[in-house]
Length: 294
Image 1 (cartoon, rainbow, N blue to C red):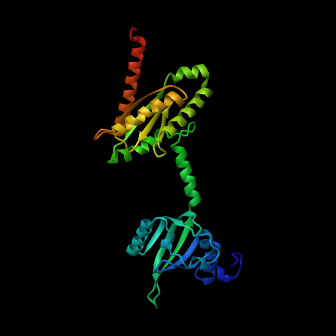
Image 2: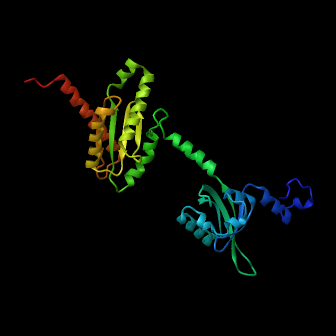
């Protein structure tokens, strides 16, 4: 490896081959050259390290297309190269020979050997895997309730356009813990928080992993079922009520609804909420006016 501290004049100009070689060998960016078949014909040490190999020969059996996780994404990049001759900061996921995934930004251009008319791709990749993981972690934190680990209202807002644009029916179940304020007053807020965590775990066990449990605030939760028609939503609601008898940490009331044609997600959620309120009104009426004994 050429030392970047060499004081020779040949390292003072980017036009000198030794200066360019020093840049390529010492920078952490992954430089590469591909032939027309996408095979790696040369690469710098950073490229080899990114792919987890020690020598260029270990990549002889691979083309870049073989390494890209999403073939459609690779085709999109190649179409851009054919149309414009270059791409810049094109994000792709590559699979290393050992199976590990890396997310990279690829910048490259097409050049042609004037003698042989053979095409080559000269490019540089920047590994952004760690940055993407940090971004994903921050994004996940922004849509999670810190106490229960459930999703929050921000996640529901993100879900709204997807549900409304989908042709599949969806439904929701609105859940409210009974007399939670009195429970907090009697047992304290610390116990109340513990109960909310236990309640969230109970709800998560009653639905599939891909069906979100959303804490709307306080003691209110929402289950979003997608896809699900009216019968399916009612079945889950009945299952919740039966499970509550045995394993729910505290009593709760629920209301459910399935989306009607042309209805917004908020309208569907509001109908579930109104159904819950109707159930509570009937329960209170029954308590004030008990049926006469025979």
